[in-house]
Image (cartoon, rainbow, N blue to C red; front, side, top):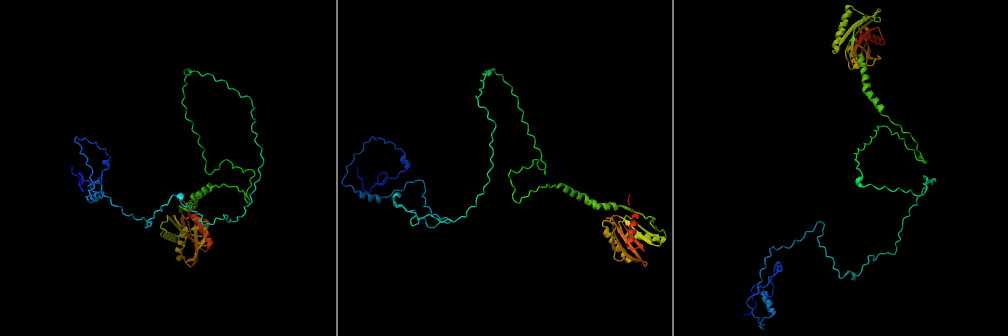
Length: 403
């Protein structure tokens, strides 16, 4: 058999002196038992002194070709990149903690109070004001203990009679059960009216109670608001319409007719008086287009006094402004002075009178207006007050409510 040469490879291609890498999984698998061979093993050759030294074999193994690594099925992993410091973190790396030289029981102990003056612990305290004296409460009155009901006389306990033997289970007849009726509902609670106090009187103060200083007991007066509210509602709903509506209903609608005789005044029927009355009536119709009826007439007395009256009927919303407008219309014809207001004594009726001239004679012109009619009179040889009173008399006789 030829001898192995220095630097020669074994038959499996591995480097002499180095064990080939083996898969751990393959290493853990059980090895099949060797199969016996029929051929005899070659005899072992004795060692010869011509073999090279171990150092020469190492140099030969280093110079030999390194085999290719066996494929493991994974790519090489690159080294991790340096981590970026977080916000607020120091860029300088934290130094590792010092490695203790030896066990802690062999190190020199450190005194935490070294160099601190711990001679005395007495600290100065602030002086607090003394507390006020405690109020002494009165001693409660002595009360008698409740004696309670008289105790029953102590004697031998009564012995209950022996229980009768129970009959056998089969001998007891079965009692039919009756269905139970549902419980009756509780009675409804009485309704409490709002605004009423409870019938239970207020509890009395405890005995010995004293009111504080300056306290004056005042009885609480119950306030009733509904009568005032009802009266206010009635006044607003009925009072206001009645106040403003009564004069209107009493003064409208009305009718007008000239009487032949009014006190000592007589209606003149001559042609001149009839022509004058017709002219005045046409003027009233022209000035008051919404008038329902018009009237005009000339009256005179036996002593020569003359009264001319004219007007019309119809609804008027503002009698006061109508009276002022009528006086203004007649101011130029009769050369009237400043008008003056006359109190008629009738709510809703307004009257104005003024002094003027007609055919070189002094006259007094008065006009009276209410919600249903207007009447104007021209008086000769009479004062303002007498003229106003006579116009009121003529108006009551001429203007009458519709029946």
